[in-house]
Image (cartoon, rainbow, N blue to C red; front, side, top):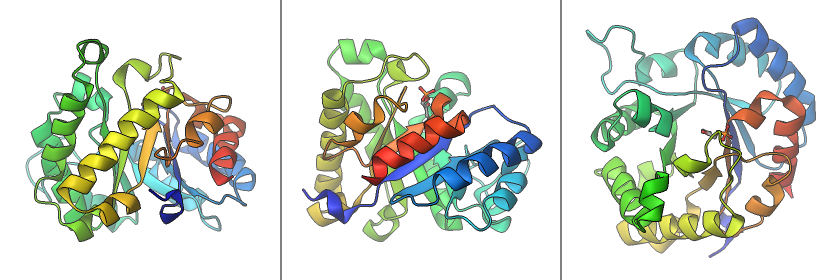
Length: 255
Ligand code: 13P
């Protein structure tokens, strides 16, 4: 296993936070702090903030992502946004399958699969979220749950397409709770996700796949989590809304 085959990706998931004006302000604060980053930096923002974000990142290496997309190209889906629409306005990244979508909006492994297909067809880079709930961890079925999530999401995805997918391991019990997985817990699951990718594709493909950790990652605990061989970056919620904290995580990933 060779971490140098992969570039770390630090992505902010702003969730339902920030207006367009606040988006401009936050990105303008982040920009100078991450200008020397030796990792990829992405900010995933609410749909209405995408134009402001795309404008604000100009002149920097920061990339913009959406937080979801629909599985159809267009049609009678009131209130939804397609992957093609995101592509058309110049958005390169999209989060798919976040646990909050699974928990509150009826997202299933099958709809995650369909959204992944649509996003790949549109040419987007995907941050695919997987993770177990607390009761699943306590029942010792963490890898069964994550294995199913990964396998269903990636069904029909070619090895070439896999290079446009980042996997984010986000234990549901660690999200927004301040209860981070230990670095060893993150490493264990991330390593098993990589083994699964190797079995579905090849070791070479697995070695190239970026597997992030997400769940209460912050400026203080990032360095330890990111020091692990299979933790290739982070998907950051709360701490991505504060420029100095987000920048500190980017710095930790750049070492
Ligand atoms: P927190 O960093 O706020 O725990 O959120 C993690 C997350 O859900 C990122 O997608």
